[in-house]
Image (cartoon, helix red, strand yellow):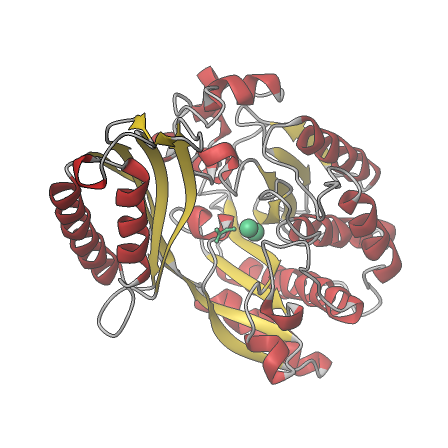
Length: 430
Ligand code: GLV
Ligand code: MN
Ligand code: MN
């Protein structure tokens, strides 16, 4: 018999207070929060969350990728997973990633306070380097959890000349044992990530909850441009091989790529100029470019078209372009059972909701390469994110955590009924 769960509820004040506490770790004097992966502030945030996990009876561990993973066993041998990331972009808001981790922790704390154990064990993860700190590819922690460490390799060198492996080691992980971070897909029935929408749809429509249908794909492209550094006063304009002017052409080629029949969005957000001196014609530029679309074919075709344009710029400007395809995070579709569970919870609790795709990337899409995944969104005021101005109304933050709790309870029932009890497994982190 399944125990009633109607009396279990999240503690909204505790959740909001914890969000507030974390927003002060890595507070950036220029505004917002800067908690780049594996840096001091990131590790401080992770350690604080680990202490809160321990108090909620989630036994916290730091895995070889420096992910924080807490787990609380259930009555049975199978698991439900939830969580997000604690690392941020430079000058981020307080919610991207952090909200999903703290709401997941709040679910565990509420179950613990109520003395309720689900059939499933509850696994709460704070994945390492979702954002791609210091020019790196990102999603390092979630890729390790699905055993695809080659997609976010430890020998990748960041903007400071430090390898990802060295960063992981400094943050308490072990880059030589990344494979051991892999979860066992046979033991975990679903992964559900709660996140702010980071786009304008829910706020504009006045909807409280977004149930995510699919998550967009993302192709990264790195470019090194080598021209000729020379004297800015003496080098005639027609004899220059200006790497930055070539980069400007590439930026415009990237910007003009999206449109009907092409990729949805394309961005060049990362640029390093050498020698970066006012009176020297730039000789070298490093660029980080990314294209996003829901359709892998469109993404591939857009990437080919951009490469043709880049090569044309190189020929016209007389510069060398070394281009390297970077991380490709494929699009993923939400598991219908998770969509149905979240929808049913919203209907039952009278919470307004709508189905929408995610234009942002998330750990859930990496975990989706191995497990059934789904996501729940809450509105972002004005659709602003990756900015110090990122905000969500408190009542939406609390409502989202409540929907996460009830969705996991619903899945606990639904999936306990459909998964044969003989198919037991180990979540892969004991
Ligand atoms: C994740 O933050 C992304 O870039 O979509
Ligand atoms: Mn982000
Ligand atoms: Mn995020």
